[in-house]
Length: 234
Image (cartoon, rainbow, N blue to C red):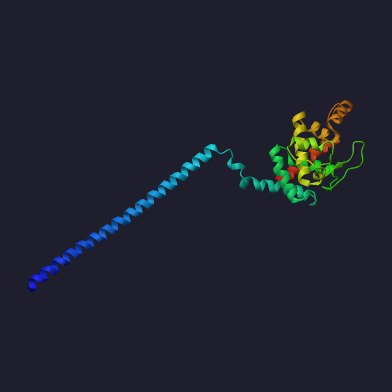
């Protein structure tokens, strides 16, 4: 009887060992399967990312060198020149706005800055009201008259109210729109700047009297703009 019991115990022991070994094998297989499944999912996700990146690069119109990370230091450097040159009369927020917007119109920001400096007598006063003339007064930093500003605003798809002429950002924007229009009209800065100063009819009169459009106003703005440009490069 003892032998029989011992045999049974032996059989039970073998069965338990077999079952235990099988359980370990199943657990190992399950772990390997889960690991391979996770790795496969990760590969699928990485592949989806690569495909999304490829699609973005093929359809995006933004060049990497035009992103703010690369462009912003240059914008700040140019703005710093304007603020320092004006002894901080030209605010940093105005300078940053001017540099960024001038880039959209492909206009030299130093040219526009000098124009604003000349127009305001170096004060950059956004609430400036010009002297009385037969045509009325000029207003704001860019010194537009109320008979001129509305159609320039309309050309730039901007709203118009007289009070907006005292908004420095609005004034800067109007000057860019008008300069862009004049430069497209005449194809050079001598005529464009003289027309800004004297009006388009005044430009024609100036050319008839002098045989050219190189007014002192146009020369000063262009010459000083070149000086500011050299400061930014140093």
